[in-house]
Length: 235
Image (cartoon, rainbow, N blue to C red):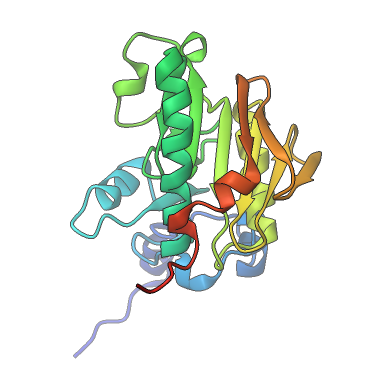
């Protein structure tokens, strides 16, 4: 036998997992976070109620799922093996330049960064120079509370243009000075100096580090020709 909930109890139970304005529809929510595919939105905890503690628990859990916290919603990052190899290749290249000069900190895709909007993002790669890190150990905490100077995203098939636009606004709103968005399929990189202004570079051009990484130059043909980013001839 089941017991029906009184209207007051039902309203109270509903309020526990609905974190959006009463007038907002699911379509509104999806539009606000970038129309990410539903299969990337976690149902537990309920969308609208997720917290940073939930995000850290899932990031550090057995499955180690890479989830971002967007307006109380846990959104799994779009990932592919190809984009992962690309990010790893780029981290090695950037890391050598940064470490030789002791310029600052480079983060990998599981480095959780708090944005000015209150959202927690996981850029595929980020760089912040020492002079923009507020305390001696700010880079050693579980959550990064300073902005990326350079935020880098590597596109996967599951990313949407709207999602990337929202991410760019978050990065620049937090204080980023440069955003690179690599497309390993088209072999291009979009270099953003604000959320909407960008230059599209291809394999015949050279990427430079701009304000965050003065002196850094990378011929894109060299990057996209890296052996682990291309078919290997059978021996």
